[in-house]
Image (cartoon, rainbow, N blue to C red; front, side, top):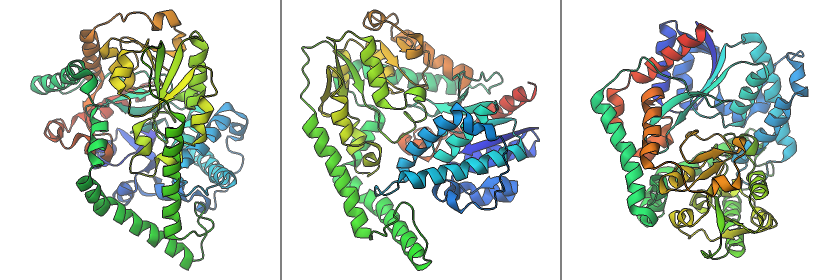
Amino acid sequence: MINYFFCVTYGDHWLETVIKLHKNKIAKPVLWLGDYHHFSKATDVFGDVVQDMEKLVHHPYTIESIEYNNEYVSFFDSIHYLRSKDRCLKMMDRLDLFGNFNRLDREAYFHNLVLYFLKYTFDNKPDLFLSTDAPHSHAQYLLYEICLYLKIPTYKFNNFVFIPLLFIEEIKTGKRFEFKKRIKSENINLKIQDSISKFILDLKDKKEKYTIFYVANQEAAKKIIPRFKTFLRVKLKNDYREIKHFIGLFIRKKTSYINPYRLSFFVRKKIKRIKKKRLLKVNNESSIKMDYGISYVYYPLHYEPERTTNPDGGEYQDQLKALIKLRSIIPKEIRIVVKEHPFQFYNSDKGSRGRSPLFYKLIKNIENVDLIQTSENTVRLILNSLFVATITGTVALEASILGKNSLYFGNPWFKGLPNTYSIKEEPSFELLASYVKYDSDHISNFLINIFKKHSVLAYMNFSQKEFFKNDHDELISKKSNDLYCLLEEFFKTKSKI
């Protein structure tokens, strides 16, 4: 039986599948680190290996009696320590609701988790690390880096962005696991292939009138009635939880490290509002109207904080580094056109946690870089560019379909897609700016091949299910056993190594 570290997202199908694997003596988790939704039921089955994600992510300073005694102490001298520290401290931006979570406290959070995980890994010795998503909380990412350091195989699920198809890949190399014993259904296969073809044809036909579904959902959410429903369903609930949490801390005379000065509810609200308004104001002041008469490479910024850059960006999780690298490989007279991600300013306050207003001024200090207005049409920008550059963005897929080459810096789900090139390949400017080699049929075949050889129908997390608005529930229910079959084959393959 395989013993594994398991990082899991929200979704009852994950719990049901892992319990079944355990009962059938195929694999058992020796660490379960995931959404609190599973905590009670998972603990009933697996006991103490189920860790309180709320505690490890939000309150790791409360972990006591670790009794660390130099287990894997050389980790502190490794590149894995330096890399994980840099990325984990940045991931903690997600916790920094009010801009008061300082570096000293973040380092203490990080180091207590290092001691805990080194000791835990030494005691439990897993055969592999598996995550249902890219490990993008600081706790999960640190555990991943420790496993890398110890040469414990690391895997994750990845997903198509426009349809709920999941596949397993090795995190470091991006190699996809081939699912050989899949349950075949010609009817469902045809429906999935039709969905892939529809996505491609929709973009090709609509061009500048096209809007990718998750942007369309966000645009719809900005209207008055959806905003009011969100306020009643989500924001009031979150406000209530926040008030209850901080009142509880005050009564118990406990310190909050994200609100160390005990700012009141209304002050905290004001801080969030000011940060969001300031970010939008500086972006508007720094951006210019697009001039389509110039020769340019299009680089749309990623929404942050989000896994698409950290950790999926790998060595290029810092977008400034990607821009500087891009500038170094194209002639200096060719401009780089940068557009902010529209999500950075939407109703949620998260965007102001992931972007400093100073960033807009910073990137303009790179020669021939233009920050353009967010109202510019993405498809028009793609069609008029020499090529597109991104870290892991879907814009590369869109560009490929529209007949443009793309350069990606990180580890996107579509690695190997026709008309796209990895920075690791060191492609020349002349190659990137040349005509594309492959038409949309090649792209369709590439995506269908990933589906047929590697993928199963399943939701990665609750957010993905919300995105698809239950469009695929019926298909997924018919293929509900596929996820178990994929993991069964995966673990049996690994047990032979």
